[in-house]
Image 1 (cartoon, helix red, strand yellow):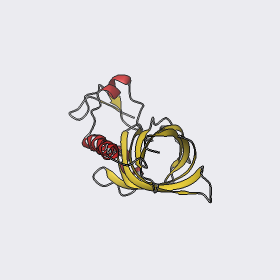
Image 2 (tube, rainbow, N blue to C red; image 1 turned 90 degrees about the horizontal axis):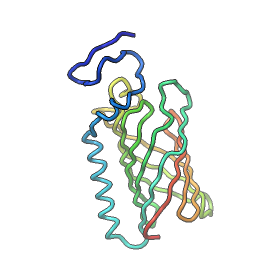
Image 3 (cartoon, rainbow, N blue to C red; image 1 turned 180 degrees about the vertical axis):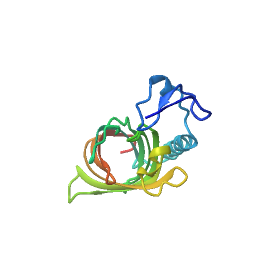
Image 4 (cartoon, helix red, strand yellow; image 1 turned 135 degrees about the vertical axis):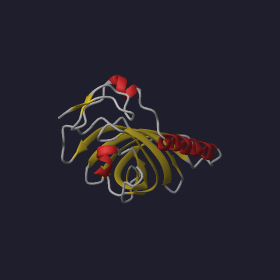
Amino acid sequence: MRLTGPDMYNDAPFRASGPELPMTHSEKSKRRPGPAWLFSVLLALGFAGTAAAADDGHYWRIQTSVLTRHFHPDPIHNNHNHLVGLEWWLENDWHAGAAFFSNSYRQPTQYVYVGKAWPVGQSDHFYVRVTAGLIHGYKDAHKNKIPFNHFGIAPAILPSLGVKYGHLFAEIQMLGVAGGMVTAGFSFGGH
């Protein structure tokens, strides 16, 4: 490990090179949202405008991460990714959404997607779903941790198993071959 000084790309004071170290609070506060973050916010606002004009059969879901585990844990892995997701659902269980979180390497990450859910058997409570979209945020030394990450954006497909009761729901989401995440949230409006 060697120490490096400030440079034109990083206004942080001296840092050790080698495995990524946890960022200090002052380093985190200096981050600026990138264009993909802005695009995701605008897309979510677009969903909001569309949903406002929708029938009663359409509804919103908001969710957060409760637990994340990696199948092959590494001390640098982040298991507290602070996910916040917003989805707009149609009556036929097609949906679109955007999620914002800190990835396994503590980098701000966005996932914009569409998906479809299907009931398990005749159950009104259990379902499976698949989302597919674009993920942005795996950068620098970690850009090759997800496949097809060209130009900082990669395609992603995430299968989930969920349970819902009234307006509350919880899901187990598979994060490729890297790990899994438990999310929980609630639905509101329209249904």
